[in-house]
Length: 139
Image (cartoon, rainbow, N blue to C red):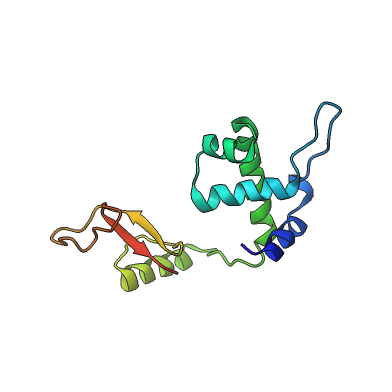
């Protein structure tokens, strides 16, 4: 993520991620709360791992991530089109099935290996370099 994106998102996110300092402690700045959440979303690191990386308790992380995710969804919902009807969802799943032979798929993340149960008689078609059966999705 570019530096300009990191500056843009905290301006776009509602004040719900900004907390007031108290007499006992200073709060975690919105930029750090956003960075923590983006790291979690990008890597899937555990809260324990993030705790050491950001020097924030697991308990605080468990509250920060859902709050910031909710704020992100509300902030960018006008820029991301989500299907609204069952027919729109069905059109998407049919497209995944036809294009990628991936039934019931609705979304992809660029460059991710998704663990699957390989189809019968597929041999090594779905065996990846990480030594497990997977389907590679690319947006």
